[in-house]
Structure formats: C-alpha cells, structure tokens
Length: 213
Image (cartoon, rainbow, N blue to C red):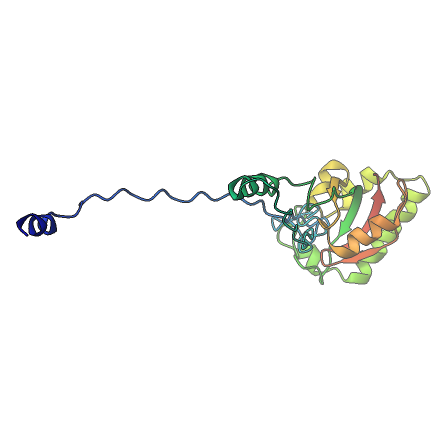
C-alpha cells in the first residue's frame, strides 16, 4: 500500500518529448501569367505576354486522380512508400506531357483592355484614349505591311506592341497549352508555323499573332 501511494505521488515528466513536426511538400503554382496573352497572365503587366501569357486563368487541368495500384503481396508500408514517391513525379503519371507552342505577337491596348497601362504608356493616357476599333485598324495596317514585305514583324512589334515582349521583337517564347488566354491560344493552334493571324481580341487588347513553333 505504501509503495502504491508513493508511485502515485511521483510527479509527471515535466518535459515530455516534443512531437516532430509534420513535413509538407511544396506544391508548384500551376499558373503563369503575362499579358501577352498568357491568360490574363502576369499581373505585372506590361505586355503581358507573360502575364498569364494570354492566359493564366486557364491553368492546366489535371483533374483526374490517379487510382491507387492494386495491393500486392508487399506490406502496407511498402505500398504506401511506392505511392508516396510516384505522386510527385509530374510528367510521367497523371499528367501527360503537354504540347508546347511558340508565337510572337503585337498587342495594341485600348480603352476596353483589362489593364489600361503598359511599359510604353505607364500612365495609360494614350491607351485610355484609343477605341477598340482604332486599335484594330492599327493592328490590321501593321499586318498588311508585314504581309507585303514592307515591314518585319519583329520591328513592328518593337515599335508598336504594348506587351513587354516588344523588347524581344514580340517573341513570347515556348509555352504550354493552358498558359495563355483561351482566345489567344485558340488562334495560335489554328495557325501553321510561319502563318500570321488576323486581329485577335482578348481581355488584354487586340493582337496580331505569328506562330513560330
């Protein structure tokens, strides 16, 4: 009896072993952005060719979940270990390799553009005073000169585009489907490499697009 009571009086361990924090994996942001059509894309704005590159809001879809593999004769822990390492692999499992596109464009912003400012017109003074029809007329005039061989696409983009890509002759670089605004991507896909579009409208403004890859 005395021994039992003495055991009860023993103080509890004042410094219990701390629990180990759980580790979390970083998840990549699925979206990109630029005004270049990347889906309303990069909020930084100008040119926006990367802005969501005419795209951001349309993040690549990978809605289908991978079904767990049938349990093998291995232990539960071994099964868990296998799935644990499969999940992070992007590209060979749930996600198929996405087709890469490449294009250059000339963006002319106007009073109806989502963001009425650009690297060329930081205050948006000229942009706010430009109607959509005026912007489309300018884009078509540039297209005609380019098609006639009177003007190089790169020069027209550098001198007229409101997208940051103007500094690269309008080149947006390679991008995956789903990274640009839908209307922009649709226009690129409809073109053959080397072909130039007519006027294309997106939330960023009006574009003339040259598919390069």
